[in-house]
Image 1 (cartoon, helix red, strand yellow):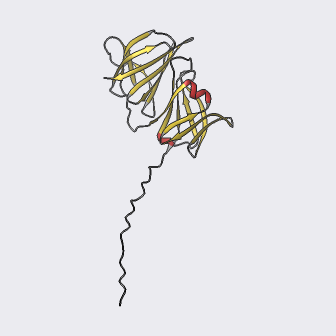
Image 2 (image 1 turned 120 degrees about the vertical axis):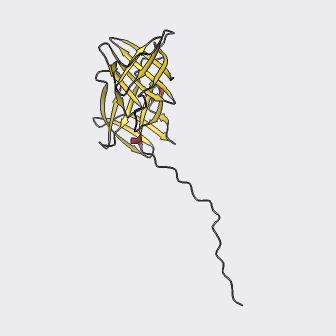
Image 3 (image 1 turned 60 degrees about the vertical axis):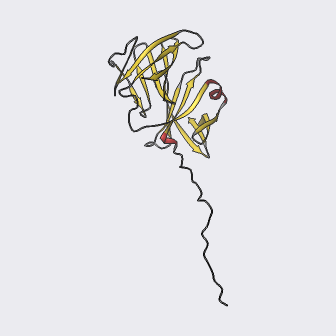
Length: 207
């Protein structure tokens, strides 16, 4: 009797491999909460200069600090002069924890960078508000590729220069104010430093 051997198809489902996470494809956003005086900031992770991180905020100069960073096992550590100044834990492209001060003072998120200026040609409507108060100022923001305008009640042609950050954020420096904007979850979030001591926080919807 001749034994018959048959090949059986492996019925196991193929393992799904999650796309690798490249932190240089993202910026880290820390939005100031309304009830404190902390400044919104953005951290970039530079592709061209490996291990370099830049923090953008509204204090002078607006590209405030050139840091170094490491990203190991989901932990981002930001270094200044060899010391860890910030630390974040990332899971599934989401910030799940941070050092105590950042956890308390900010709404933290990751925003994927773009190859195209996401502000160019768009108009946003919303208001600036003063942290800790009910004071609000309604405005229209309109962006071209290099300039923006701020007006109310109707938008006007862009007339003030801004600088783009990774095509998803921008900053502007003027005589008495510095402004920082970032697109988060479809909204344009803004933070403004009015000199010498005032701050404004804004949320703007695309029209």
